[in-house]
Amino acid sequence: MGWREEIVTALDEWIAAEGGAGGKARWRRLGRAIRTGEGLYVVDVRGAELSPDRVDGLRLAGAEQGSIDEGFAVMDVSQSESTLTVRVAEFADPADPHLWSLQQPPTFLVEALKDGIASLGSAPLGDLLALKKPGGQLSRARPPAGLFPQQEAAYQACLGTGFWLVWGPPGTGKTLVLTKAIGDLIAAGKRILLVSATNIAVDNALLGILKGHRHPPGTVVRVGPPQLREITENADVSLPLLVRARLKATDAKRRDLSERLVAVKARLRRLGELDAALAGFDAAGYRRDEIFLRAPQHQSQRSEAAVTLHQTRINSLTTAIAAAERELNEAGAAYAAIEHDRRLWAQVDEMGAEAARVDQAATEAEAAALKAEQETAQAQRQVNELEGGSPRHVDTGCHAASSTLSMVCCS
Image 1 (cartoon, one colour):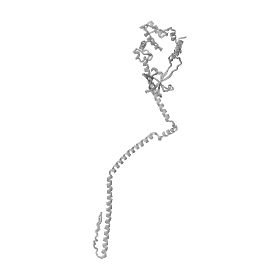
Image 2 (cartoon, one colour; image 1 turned 180 degrees about the horizontal axis):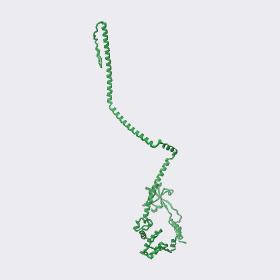
Image 3 (cartoon, rainbow, N blue to C red; image 1 turned 180 degrees about the vertical axis):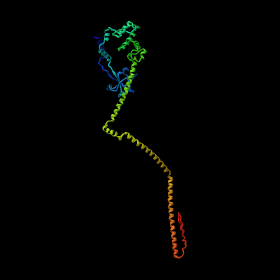
Image 4 (tube, one colour; image 1 turned 135 degrees about the horizontal axis):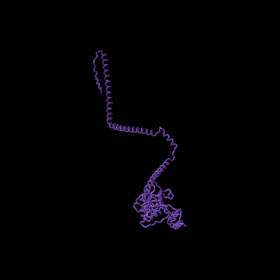
């Protein structure tokens, strides 16, 4: 039995002790999510065993299991006592939102480890480790200047093949050899993994590599909590800073995409409204009306000009009507003011008519008196002729007096 089979057998026994393999992941509803901002939701998780760093196992969806596939992945999580604040895409707005957690079976990681080992191909280093026989082929590369023979051998071992053990007490230059070997391996396009039981040992070796300035930013990455300030604050090496910079750029792209999706969602909603409004739309009738409206005599510019002209006339007539109403009101007020004078003028007119009647009567009386005098004179002449004598004046005893007002007759 090879070392792979031994490890797989041991892992099978471990899985059997945990209850067996074959368990499937299932979604568990944690609680109702309350929206507190754009893309932000708060969930009460009292009584739920949940680790805030398991962002990949959280999803915001509806209240039913079938809505999970159409839900939204959680991008960020922060926990405060019994509440969990999750951040999703800004356009996420599920009906009756709930937070779901993907629960893996207890043997999930052990099964993944077993499957990974079982699928390994050629693993010469693993074979050497299993046989406990370190060794291999030293590199023929020329060691850097300034190294002792033992350091040169260690350097060539790092650049060679196989599995090597290099031992040395403090101060023998192990970090120096690692720094030079790792720098040359990276320059040759190799992938290097440097691990240590202490963080400071990794930082010291990494600091020596960085001082060489031979590699572009992002080529060397420090994983884990560094202890040297030069490593912690180096944005080209520190994994948290690299991730933060990458997330910042990614977040900017995500926000841009989210804004576009929000706009698309708004347009889809508007299209739905328009589609509902166009129910029963008569396309043929619309085409006829369009042709009619596009005729020269129906151009909107001409219609607008006509409307403007008529509106101007209406405004002018409105002004004239207002002025006429003011004049009418003023005339009415003046007419009411001369009502008393009109009554007096009416009385004057009546008196004038009465005077005219009296004057007419006097004129008629005077004419009658003159006629009577003439007749009297004629009668006197006739009497005188009859008596044969000379004419003489006879006082008839009647006196005629003319006046514009009256006539008096005496006998």
